[in-house]
Image (cartoon, rainbow, N blue to C red; front, top):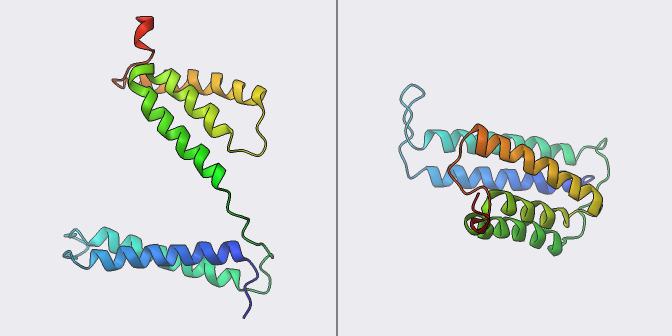
Length: 153
């Protein structure tokens, strides 16, 4: 049996491993019944679903009709951009406000794309900043600073 689609093979294997970890770790709690669920019930069911889906994906990767796809080279810079953008958002949220933190998040995370364009990113920043401000600050009335403190808004 040869692996035709290595992407699906490793994705299925990852699902199976995570599902098995959920099931094994939930064994230390009481299961309960469907009508009176214990703390182990949900993680066990979720782990079982992950194992089942992982098995389907893994078996599908071995089929003769599966497309031949290889796992791409690991790119550390993309992970650094994405995790760094979240860290910048967290660092800027209180002193710089929601809008400034969001601008930093979007600009830095957009550098992770191979199709980065300053013009497209600028348009995205404006649209997402306005939409996020309206949804989270005005609509949901989240209690966080919207603007930098020095602006006095």
